[in-house]
Image 1: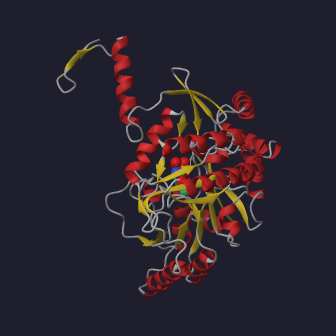
Image 2: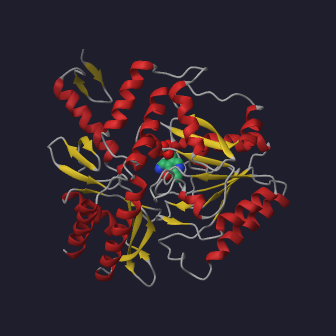
Image 3: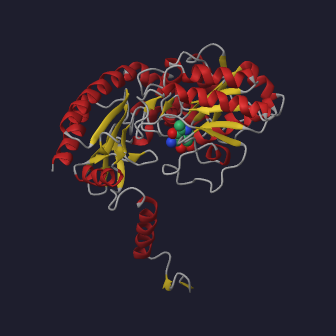
Length: 440
Ligand code: PMP
């Protein structure tokens, strides 16, 4: 059946093969143009390798922040088995869903024992905020500048980053308050004023309380991904959590990027800082790319929330996603992937740091485990971000078969977050390719 839509301008037959190809290409271009001029058409993958429609292989250093990479046989088996048993949620979930929730809570400190399963990181953050607002009866939330927490209404509202957030709300709602924090590319991290950021946040909390608007929650990534891949300074969370709790608010740790071993330990972010939040959000790695996210709270908070109503998500934490989640947990343990993330991550950081001695464009190498940020600068003194150069470098890395993307509000950090199974040889290939690109 032909259409003669004057806007689309053609008498096109939507079932025609050429028309289908045309539409597919148009769709692909509109989705992908954000990153590359000539994006690869990826069709398959195996661990940290991806293969395009022309059978070209790529080293996947971004990988949607999964843990096991593509096509893990344990994940495939678990999903297929669960599909034969029970497909979808019921209000009387048992089996894989309950087993998974229990094993997830066992990874966390004893106080955090109640798990709500959802489909994604954004949903997890949205629910965490909803829980904080409902249980405290307050409307205000405190977030850190230049953070990304998701695309749903509430997670977007606390996503204070601009460049890394294509979904950004045009106007931030007035219930979101933002505090500044050190970041990689402004070079302020190592400065003498690091402690100031915690003091500023504490002052803001006291001020809001004095104005009769104490925050329901403070939300932060303890390992500040969007700012270039780096930990918040020691003692920061301790001080800010104490202040928010002093006024009856809750501490939310967004572990969507780093929870589960990217930095070599389960919940590196807040564990390294020696603090226990009231609510933790996880996603990404826990489902290895499948729709799975979780909000984990203390029993007390969960009980207060349940008094407000009942949480149910039709697809959230489905039996199939939960079975995948269990397979991921088994694989992390059996294949010692957290140890691998530590070892290969250390090797990669050493090699990148050596590279920085030879290439002025590298301002610094941040981070740890398999979550490193290579900050590219025009001037090492001023740390002026080399934004345009970073995009060009990513394009040239693609020609050498490496997928890596710029990140941060200044888009001048190459953030490496490959699957935790990355081997040394592939890490070396990444460094050699970057060396080549920076040398020519
Ligand atoms: N929180 C953080 C820290 C994230 O990095 C992201 C995704 N980049 C999200 C939340 C949202 O997760 P999702 O894309 O799974 O909705």
